[in-house]
Structure formats: structure tokens, C-alpha cells
Length: 376
Image: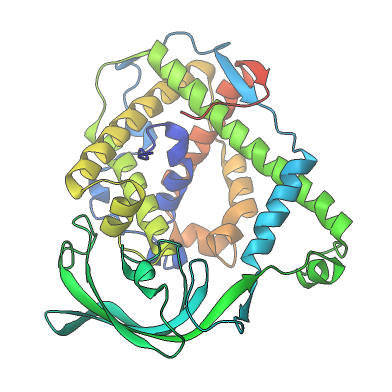
């Protein structure tokens, strides 16, 4: 299913804090796009919500909350998945040809028009046959190849391949099979659990209890985010917004760009390649969706700010100091003063205000508990 760029305000809360921290020289800055048009952005206290926002119903709006209980079956399923990630490779000794499902250790070199292309060469690469990790025809072409054998695979890159110079290109991969292996899952026992080095967890039963608590906490976080998204969307739909400042749209546009640039870097990809692979969009469609998401988030923010004015919600200096004290380390800073000297404190304060308003809305919503939320 084609993924969509988030168009709800809560998706930008952390991003807003990251923009507030983007003046520093920490890892956050290094892994996200530096904001180039920050001068065009505005702070929340510069926005005229009094004359541009008319509120509708915002208290008692109906939202649904999913259950956060975790069954024993879910715990066991996660353990089974986790153990598959800790699998060992055992060499195949009863045959010498590659079969589907094997892990083939290979050397390969790809050439286009007789010239090796960037990213097309590797040695000692472990490839699971049938995983779909390589372009169509590569893995299939290795089935039946003997250990120690070298073959040429004439292939064609997909037309929608992210690298434009290879999209639709005819190439030849020269591949040598060094060895043939199969995955053997590690055994889930007390020795394995102890090796995870989790404080106070040394047995399989202790790990099951620990894991169940972690999963319930994660479920709770997801449920809370779902409620936040619901209530913000509803109070925005109930309100009327006349004019949205361009600077506020720019702010949320940068949040989306910075967040996705960071996500792309986690996969070792540039933004364009990540968008193509994850969202299935070209550059033009991505730009249009990102702008639309920013416009909707800016509109939601204005409604929230009008509610804050109506309900006298603000962030005091004491609350600001407490938040910095509790969170500076999570941004990679050594202390409060280093944090304060590196970040845009007004931007950070705006993010705290937004969080406080969202919490107010959820706390005042009419919540219906359900066993499971249906994903759209």
C-alpha cells in the first residue's frame, strides 16, 4: 500500500523540537537538512489567531482508544521473530549447488557498457536467495550455480530504479559463489537471555515478563498518538481558519523535510531515494504532498493556539527549565547551559506549548475504549 506523508500536527511535535535544536553542532544537526529559509518562519506568539480563527467544539469531542494489553501469543510471536534475527549461518555440506532459501556468499561486479558502475561491486556478500534484495533475475540466476563457480548474469534494471543512470539500463553482473549456507535459529534459553545484558533479566521467564511490559508500553504510546491525531483533526474540522501565515507553513514544511532526511540517513539513503522506495513517489509528487501536509499542520497549529488563548494555556519559565533539565541529555548535550546556548529556545518553547495543548484536548475528550483500532 502506498504510504502517505503525515498531515496531522502530532507528527510534527518532535520535529518542531528538532528545529529548535538545529543551531547546535550535535548529531541531530549533522543527520538532518539544515534549515535554509529559517528567516521566513515565525514563532507562535507572532501569529494573529484572534482575527483568523473561529473555534467550534473542542471539548468533549469523541475519540476512540485502542486497548494496550498484550497476549502471551503476541509475546511468543515476537520472541520467534527476534530469534530469527539472531540466526547463525551453517555451511551446507550435503550438496554444492545453490538452492532457493540458501544464503550464498558471493563476490560480484556489475558493468554497464563494459564499465563497472558505482555500488555494483562487492566481495564476501551474504545474499539470501529469494529475499528480493537485488534486482529481478539476480537471485534467480544463482539457483543451480555450484560453489566456486563464476557466471555472468545479463540483467536489466527496473525502469523506476532510484538511480537515474541505471534505471532501465542493461548490465552484466559477474558473480562468484564462494560458499553456500543456511540460517539456523539460535536457541531461546537462559544463556541467550543472559547474553542480552538486560538489568535484572537473566532467565527466559524474566524476559517474557520484561518483553510484555515493553510491548504494552509501546502499544500505549501508539494508542495515545492515535487519540492525539483524532482529536486534533476533529477540533480543526470544527473550526474555521481564514488565513494561514506562510511562515507557519514553512515551519512545518521544514519539519517534514528534516524528519524524512533523518530517516533516510538511518537507511544510508539520500532523501530522493528514500522517498521513492518508501512512499513510491517521484520528486514532484513528494513536493506536492509535503506542501499539503505542511498547510494542514499549520492550520491545526493555529486552531490549537486559539484554544490556548481561550483556555489560558501557556508555558511558564519554570516549566521550560524543568523540560530542559529532563531532556537535554536526549538531544546529546552535556548540560543545561550547553543546551541553552545551542538551541533556539523560543522554538523549543513553542513545541512545549503545542504538546501542552494537545494533552489538554485529549484529557477533555470523550474517549471510547475499543479492543483494536483499524488502520486506514
